Structures are given as structure tokens and as C-alpha cells.
Length: 512
Ligand code: GLU
Image 1 (cartoon, helix red, strand yellow):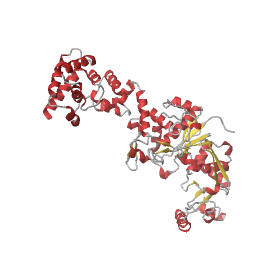
Image 2 (cartoon, rainbow, N blue to C red):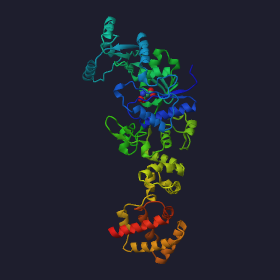
Image 3 (cartoon, rainbow, N blue to C red):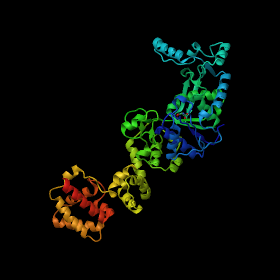
Image 4 (cartoon, rainbow, N blue to C red):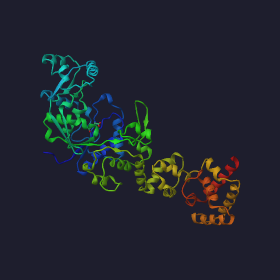
């Protein structure tokens, strides 16, 4: 009988930073758990000491926290099935491997690395095969199936290094029922005798994963497609332990593919193609290399969540923007596709732009604040609000905020040479000076009075609108970009407007 309380786990190995594919796995587990009012568990699978990377566990937690994915049980929070870090559970695995050995489903193997290497070499040379430790080859190797029991005992007590392998039975069909892929049937002839317990006294992923899913009462295993080939082995382990009728249901998520080509999106693709593949920035402690993250690049967590939600799952409607609550409501495993989804960096930006537009001026102002502080400018909240209002629609990433608005807070330090050459003629300084005098006379300076003044000035002097506006923009912004001139002047105010023209004319007349 299957229990009805859903319990799912996200089970990363702290072997490096969490790729966005991993964040998606965590997200789908989270959505599924919340949808079914179930329990979401974080289990750290750190039994491979050789691949352990310092800081990776903390990185994983910080990334998921940034995305708003919360756990109910975890190494930090604890819970009824603690500990949730596999390296702290070694005594448990020892007991379970003992059960398998006793029942004849696992055996000791004493082959040294050099001996196995020789087998690999021979297989290659003699039969052009890849060596596998399996139901055929195990008969020729040094293990407790072949050796007489007194010799096995001697080896076990003589500190000889050994591993424990699963004894794959001959010619059995193993069926994996996958919620996404349907039935996957494999004959045991195609499986090898994987190591379950290593010479360092720790289990491998396969044993620890199955034992923990059982002990932690996991009902659904939702994980990446790369684990599908291991699923038959896991099903066999459930069978050997006698847990087959309470085995979790499996759902293997399709791969996230590169934008160009068909391969899996890898950690190198992001920086090669100009977008992050990690949720937050990662500094590799071994190589010192830094990989960019969505957070630091200027993405909002809600946009990242939406990007990932749509990479594999589809709502079945045209709706594209969801809050986390809406995703919980809509999500279902039935709507996860079988085929890999191509990552689309442009679409990712589109999502972020949409979410940026939904932020209030005040929230965007808070995002701008660190940039202001780093330039030692401290405008009023009201002033920041006006600026945000004008630049908001052109901001895609939060890091664009400063780029789109700095000239509201600082006078340009230089004037774009290309633009200058294009728009500045011999008479320009003269008529800009004349215009400035008119501006100075304005008592009430705002976008409407300025607009009227510009109209009058162009009408009486015969100077074209563009001939006036482009130089003014260059003096205000240093280039030919920015929001509408009247809006810009309105926010800057008369003093700043006048001062920028004065300063700009002085510099241009002196240097060009
Ligand atoms: N520790 C595995 C990983 O790093 C977990 C796979 C699973 O969820 O079973 O992805």
C-alpha cells in the first residue's frame, strides 16, 4: 500500500556549484510537494569524499534560498529522519550492506586497482570490449563468490582492501515505472555488478540513495534524466531488501539542452554564449575561476523560477508569467515532457524584463541604491522615484538600472566624440548660448514651459528641432541616449539643466 502523504527530496552532491538544471530539479520537487501538501526534504549526498568541494553545500543552500525554495527537513532544520547529510549516516549503511551480503545479494571483491586495470586492458586488446565487472567476468575475478570461504575470511581480517558489489541476478527483467516515460524494461544481462560499499567504509550513491529514500519514507523520486540508467539497479535493491511494494514512484526529468546544438547545457556553455548557467556566482576554490550567476547578472529570482518552470513543464495554456503560488497550483508531473528543452537566453531576458516591469518604483529604487552609494550620490527617495518612472521600461536586468539612469545623478564626464562630430556645427555653440539665456529667464521651469520655449525659439530663429535637441542631449547625457528631453530636463530641474549647458559649452569650446 502506498502512503498518501507525499514526501520528496532534493538530493544534491556537494561536488561543485548547483547548475540551473539542479535548481530546476529542486523547483519541480518543491512544486510537487507544495501542491500535494507534502514534505520537501534536502538531503546532502556527500559520500564521495574524492569529489567533495568545500563551500558547495553552502552554495546549494544559498542558491535555493535565493530562489525562494524552502525545505521542511534538511541538515540545517533537522527533522524526524535526521541526520540529512549522508556522511553522518555511515553506521546505517553498514547495517544495510550487511543484510544484502547475508542474503547473498552482494559480495566482497578484493581485486586491486592494478588487477582491474589489467582486465580493462585485456578486454580492449583481445575483444575490443569495455571491461565490466558483471555476471560473466565475476567468475574470473577475486571475490567472495569465487574464493573458498576460509580465504575470504582471511582476506577480510587481514586488512586487505575490499569493496562490496551487488550480485546482479541472471536473466531477469527489471521494470522501472516512470511517471514521465512510462515503462522502462531492462534485462539484468545488461547490468553490471556496481560497487555498493567502498574500501573507505562509505557507501556509494546507489546504496545510500535507496536506503535513505526508504528510511526517509520518500514517496516520489523526481530527478534528472541522467539517473534513469541507474533506476533498474535501484529497483533491484528495493527488491532485494523486500521493499518493492513501498518503492517510491520515479519521475526522470528531461535534459536542459544547449541553445546551439543538441547536447546537455554544460557549465562552460554559459560563459561561452554570454549567459549564466549557475543561480549565483561561483568561485571555484580549486582553480580560482569565477563563473557568473543569475543573481549577480541582474536577474530576479521570480524570473529564474519562471524560466526553469517552463524548461520541461508546460501549463497547457498561453499563460507565461506565474507567481510561485500560481506555479504550485498549476504544476503537474503529467505536463512534464519527455524531450529535452533548449535553453533560450533571449527568452530568459524577456522573462526578466516582464518581472522588472511588475516591480514597484520603490522596489526598483532599492535595487538602484547600492549603485548610487558606490558613486557617493544620495538623492531623495522622491527624486529616485521620478527617475525610475522614466527609465523603467528600458531596464531588462537590474544591472541595467544604473546604466539607464546614471546621468540623472551625475553630470557627464565626457562627450561622445562620434555623436559630437555628427551633430555639432560651427554655429551650434552660439545658438545654444542664446537658448541658454532664454532658459535662464524662465521663472517657472518645467517640461511644459520648456516645451513652449523650444517651440518659440525654433520658430523665431529658424533652427530645426533636431539641431537644438541633439546638442542639448549631448550636454545633458554625454551621448545621444536617454529618455525624452523634456522629461529629463523636468527631473533635473533648472539649476542642473543650466549648469550642464554652461559646463558642457565651456569644455567643448576649450577642447574641440
Ligand atoms: N546525489 C545525486 C545527484 O547529485 C542525486 C540523484 C537522485 O536524486 O537520486 O544528483
